[in-house]
Length: 186
Image (cartoon, rainbow, N blue to C red; front, top):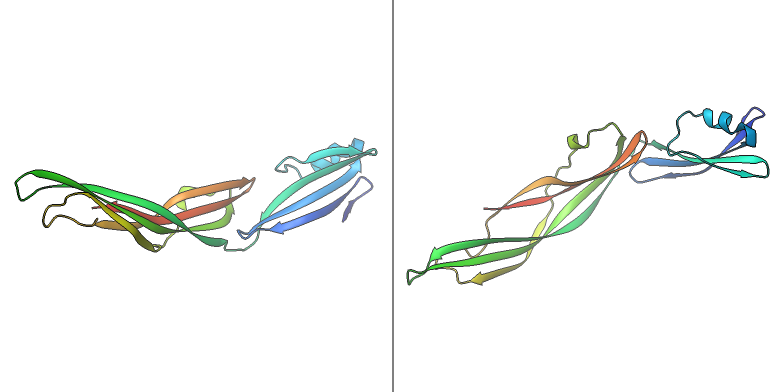
């Protein structure tokens, strides 16, 4: 509890630290009802705006403040279901043009890293790295492939940022960057 002269008293009511490194502190300041503007001016610009309620001739001002610690954040793994297909054409033994389609279903690992950055950070400059595992679950061939024709897909895999999620806390942003395997069917 901190006393600010005869005008008001301030108490930190709770503090939580998230795995990302974001620190959330809840505060309460109590003062005489006619001292609200003075009590609000101590901190300058507070985000989000404090709430003010009146009780028994006192003003109770409550707000949440955000800061960051030195945490490197955290990473979580996920899975993405990918369906890839390609249609092929060829000439069969009778000289007829035929086509067939190969469809493959893959499970691809994703990695999401969540950290706290200054809100001025350009998210397009942030990227994750690493190529997660991938496993083919099923292959379906529809149509009749010609003799010597493709029976499976030829795929080139690259790691890429597939998602950025950003939550703003005034001067700080909690940013989650998801990296996944991006397939190119050759």
